[in-house]
Every structure is written in C-alpha cells, then in structure tokens.
Image 1: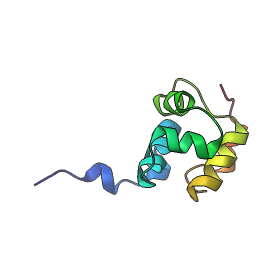
Image 2: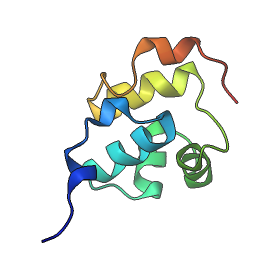
Image 3: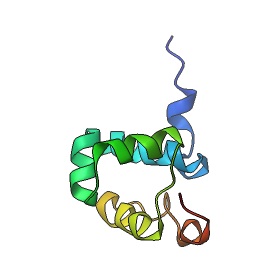
Image 4: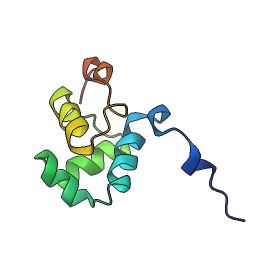
Length: 83
C-alpha cells in the first residue's frame, strides 16, 4: 500500500516555500505558467519554492488571487520580512 500521509496533511500548516509549491502543483501549473500569472520569472518562483528568497507582500497578494487559496497565503505573511 502506498503511503499517502503527506497528501492528507493540511497545506496551510506547511512552511511558505512548500505552500507555494503545493498550490502550484494543485493547480497543475509549471513554474513558467505560475510565474507568468504572477508577473515574475520562473527562476523567482523556483527560488521561493526552495526557500532561497521570500515573496514580498505584493507577490503574496498575487498568490492569494491567482491560486484562490487565501488560507495558504494569509495577510500575516505580508508583514514578515521579504527577500
């Protein structure tokens, strides 16, 4: 039997990089397509997903809008330092 515990986990409890990746995959989007919808580059999305950089407040708002998942990207995330 295949272990599916990671699929049953509430994605809103994941760290921000994993929430971005989860939302992108749930929408069936490539890095390129998500980047296009957000108005950024695929390399930026990849860096966010790897935790190398953090999206700023504007991109977090765009993530809420594009993904339709405001619970994954709450406004409290906007207040944290971005990089």
